[in-house]
Length: 167
Image (cartoon, rainbow, N blue to C red; front, side, top):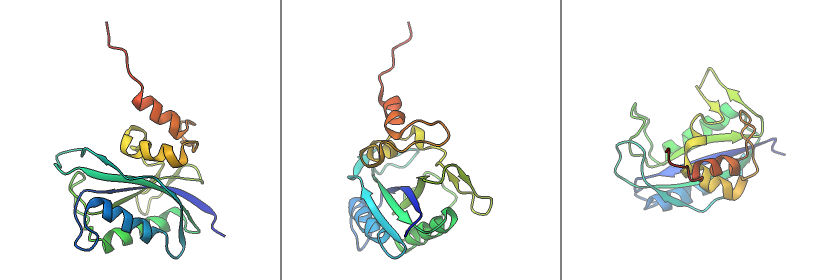
């Protein structure tokens, strides 16, 4: 029986020769996640979002709730192997176009930091990213950020709440 649950963010803004559009890439990536020692418990619908940074291509984004026996560093290695199989080549550019991006956002083990892989859970930027919080709220809205104690629904509400204009 798997001992860990993870919230994994999926993103794509490039066509793939076999899987087609970014939406097709995410559908194929979900199938790749639901294999072997990984089991997809739930997946959000795919949303399209504007890019962050200088990229001009729109992104397809989703999240999946995954069960696995793998520890975080092992899961990261597996996710990077899947990205590589889809044609992702890691470069120094943080904002570049990519065929597939898989990020561990949260896990049921609380905060985690690895010196070996630079993996940090919760993902350092997830609290400010609607393209993660919007789909995550639909499948894991009650999951809590172990650092703030706030649920995903609450974090999302903070981002979407209208702000009063200064007087």
